[in-house]
Image (cartoon, rainbow, N blue to C red; front, side, top):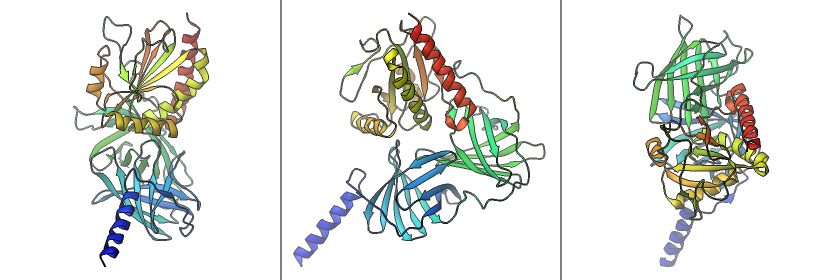
Length: 415
């Protein structure tokens, strides 16, 4: 009897180890689950659920965010349970299979303390908020937005970009702000009511609004389980924000920046190193927890590979929570694997704008993660670009891609 109990305890400990965040997990290929479209729901609070779209082809799972597809790493936790790990951010779902049509579990953001959201999913639901129907009315494509309009101290502007399909009422959207965009949003506009959501592994966004009699939109914006604010919008084809290269700048008396931060091998890197001497350098202020930083990293890696032989260098200053080297080593490995980053990264400090500003005292402030500082061959700062409008913003993203490429090419030919 004693040996039976010990053996059972040993088996239980092995199972629990396999379910730990770092434990080895075996690939799972469960063909009993229904293939095709699934609808996932994250419970933000007792009365609010955030929907998102999933697809399963018998081998792999994907999260669908508008034009974006996020491939999940699927591992077995047991005969009827599994873990989905999201790329880049390292967050995950622990899931129990109820039957071939239903899943239950929780989403865990391990970078935040005790951050868990209940989750469920059901097969055969190829929609986000409701079945597809013809749109009852039209919606302007561009809107001037004010977030927290009733709180002047915390109010901030935005620009909404909407694309409504009149045949299905499906609405694709993004919101641009002075610190970046809210990436790929999708939902519907029916009976003068707007609903949008996005889930990318780091942020869970939910927008609701009702069109008012004067043509404006008035609604609420929810981010995760802790934060929400009101927002209002007016259709405005000329809506714009302050230029992103005007928001951060060098303090008077400075024309260069300097720093010295450790990389994952324990070596300190600075712009005075031989590697950067006489090069055009882009200094990326970022964090692994930041979806806009993920989008910017993909673009910087593309340009790093294109222009490196001509004299371009990129270095990422990573501000993380928690700020410790063991955590940073795991983060760097994940970003190099999931995003293909090959340029150097250093651990610059905690994920806090005030702390980041203290680490770079020649700047007026750090307004946003990410921020890109473009430096010429003489080491002088030529441009500081605050925030990032990614591929979810369409033409705005393409314009910045072209603008950045032209600036890099201009600086590369200068002596």
